[in-house]
Image (tube, rainbow, N blue to C red; front, side, top):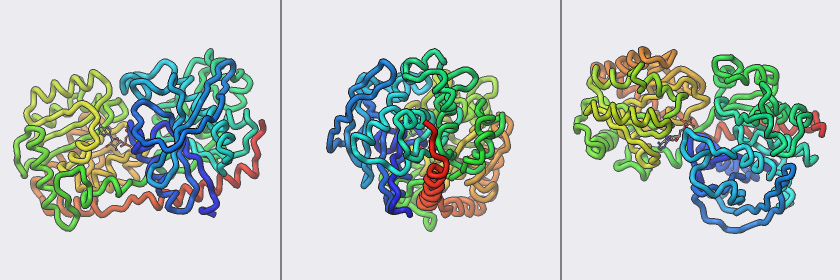
Length: 484
Ligand code: ADP
């Protein structure tokens, strides 16, 4: 059936056009692999100022209406390798600094309108292109209103909704319903109201045909109060329509044997190049050039999900204890909450074995994976997590929390070091466990590195699982047609 399925992938990011986090990697790579399996897959995303692409064609798709608001819209057509991508061009909504907000921890005030218009544009785009995909695959809350607008248009495309992070739900005051042209009755009918707020994600789950998330463990976790961010009851209610498919990683982009972002290539059969990458990163960051000191890397958005309070807040201070109590070097790359950026810089000033690079730097992210011996991910929750997959491929052993996709992909004592909870004590304890192995038993450490590098998290397998899920979703939609 795969070669007869057509898919419109809708997302707020897609690598390499625009990327804030793992969502972009997942959407770009999944699309490429579905295409390779014979699927007619096309991507739809907003045309932000940050988008990098060469446009090949412009299509005027006409008017997008939401209540009294009307947007005159066009799409710019481009390609991610062999996959067609359409970028929704509404300059007043998308052509400005910052994808989601002026800073990573600040949202644009009109995000409700921006992403409602994005969702409302989907049926308009399909009509204008005279292309009705068998299935629309929407990612995260920014796509959550699509099924409601499909209903409004009387469209019969199947809709699959994938949750990449339930911590971001797109919830807004109910007073804004009129701004997107829906009345309370319609919004309730489409499951858009949660705790008396308009909630995009609730709409995607309730009103879509099937929904999924990006690892099996996270599919279980989001049904619990601890991880559900208030959505757990909705998830439990609809759990018979929920699947968990673990993300793959893109070996075209992330493989030390051919990665052009790293100074020396290497593979699991010869790690000499990795030692050279370490030496060069030590030089680049001004750290002592010493092979025998374990280098701990971390590349992350600096947001609470990633365990930054436990790590860097003076109250918990795990990072400072590690830097002062253990013979290690630390290189952290990240941007996000301002207090944390400032705190990391202060920790760097107080500790000559710690370097904090504040900002976003794709090349440096690769160099850190290649140079480091250990990769720190003390996440409070991690839906899938791509960083630990990249780290393992580069022979950098994750020191990470046993949660979500990390629990599904890292084997404790074999390919990494897992802690049960991300509190300061556990972080320090797990880092010292890893450092002890590195210094006292280098051959076992090396065995673990080689095991980690040989793990396979191929997108092809995940893409096949998505194809099965598409088939099931299409069959479901045929069996239970939407009431309009
Ligand atoms: P999330 O999607 O929650 O941010 P993931 O681990 O799934 O976490 O994906 C993070 C992705 O973003 C990885 O590709 C990582 O290398 C990249 N990334 C995060 N912060 C930065 C940064 N400051 N510079 C470069 N890449 C970054």
